[in-house]
Amino acid sequence: MDNDNEEEDLRFNSDKSDSELLNECEMVLEDLNDSVETRRKNLRKSVEKRKEREDDSSLEEYITVTRKSKRLIRSNSNNTENNNVTQKNNLRVEEKQNNDATNIEVCVSSVNTLPKQMAFAKLLNNENIKNILRIKYKSPYKVLIRFATNEDAENMIRCQKFKQLGFKCYMTYESTMSFGIIKGVDMELKEEEIMNILESESKIISIKRLKRISLNEVWVDSETVKLCFEGSTLPSYVYAYGCRFKVNPFVFPVTQCTGCWKFGHYLKYCPTKIKICPKCGGQHENCEIIDYVCLNCKGPHLVLDKQCLYILKRKVSEQLWPRKILHIEKL
Picture 1 (cartoon, rainbow, N blue to C red):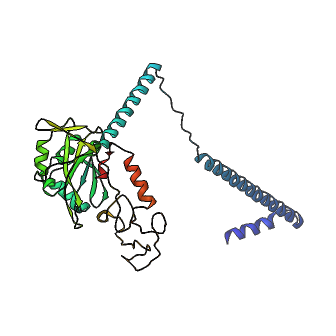
Picture 2: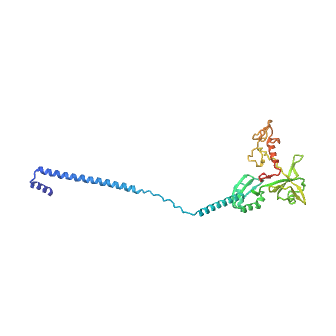
Picture 3: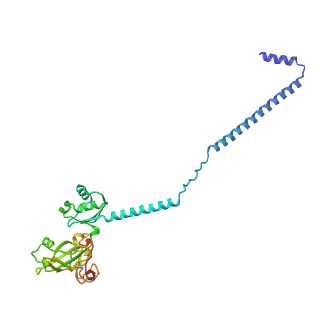
């Protein structure tokens, strides 16, 4: 209230006219508007500058970092040559060790079926046979065992438990041998006695008396004995009681399966275990068909006919080797 009274007193006390007072008021208002606009402009400028600063700062936050290149250590040519030589020598040593390991392999065979994998591994563990690298089954009657050292392989070969079970253990690289026969051996002599009597330049591994078919069509022992020698050279003679006896090369007979009628194995070791008819080739043991068809050469005869082309070829190939040198798998 006091302020309003003072303004009214000023108006009444002033000598100016109303128009002049209005002009002055308008000028004051214009000054006020100008000051407000300038303030707004300054605010806009400050806001824009602030945005520019923020943009610049945001760009400066992401800094690309690059990795410096590696510094290679300079080495003398002699050092590099020595390193290459040592690397080559190490590679040769590793190759030699691998080859030695592959050569240390024992073959285990048996007339009866061998144990399965887990049972065979348990048997090896019980007999304290260690450092086994691989066990590979070739058939239910034959398995190959690879060892890391030669001592472990020898321990398995000398193991009495395997001998009691009827297993034959031998090194695979020692499997090259030759076979011969001697005729006219007394029927009273047993195989063990003949083994103790005979002497030879080559080591005699085994002796087996051969059989023949009698007049009654029964297999009986004969006077011929088959000898198995170590090595690829078949001796010409063997000695007994100071006399020498002629050794003839043994020709293996043609092996034919009576199940699948293929060559190279017997029925016991047949991989298919399927009985096939020798007349028609059907999956049955026999039939009454008259028109025969050979399963091997497709000729008009029985599959076991001795005049079959396949059987004749096998016989010729066997006779071409006067001194039979076979891998032990042929046994």
